[in-house]
Image 1 (spheres, rainbow, N blue to C red):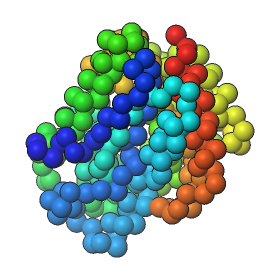
Image 2: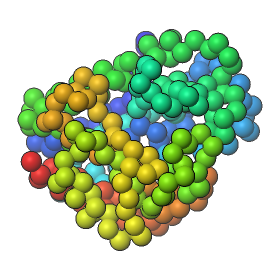
Image 3: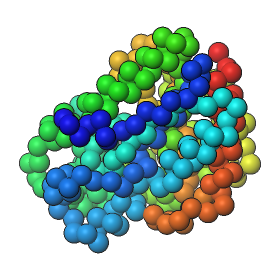
Length: 267
């Protein structure tokens, strides 16, 4: 449990801001003991990290926070999603378990073995997943107590071409995909996102990835918690897979800052 506080970071924003930028998949970092439980050699692991990491999304969120009129709060995962994926359900509700990519992955993006059969995921869930969930829940609760509402903007990216692990990879893959939840994504928030990201070549909803992150304590229960997932197709801003960022990154950060300010001003 001693590693848990170092596996994520809450970066304070303006006291009166309801907005939390959530960046869960930007890191490539693996603690040594977690690396030891992964069967891939160094070359294959580097390749897997190229495919699975939402590269440069932390930088997009950082620039957006600096450009926004009112600084949002940021909750950043400092470890790779190959440690745990904090956005998966930790139980039978998670559909990605069917391809070995539940809260703790046992298969790669190409459905190869990542961890051995019979791997016990419980220690990783206890050490990393559960503290992360508690901290994110507390961050949302703090915004509710202070401002009366919370707006989670989930910052992701996805590959131009579908990967074998995707369960819904045959649908549209627009430059910007907005993931929604029927209870937690109000029309005004979705409209603000469409306006902010207009000009990147097209915006879609819930394809190839649907939904958005809300802590389980609030999920389906508290409509004061609004949420939207922003999925950016990687060719818009970087060289795939896992390569450097290009000029599109700054433009995306400006658009995200616009969304942050609109979300902060929308009741």
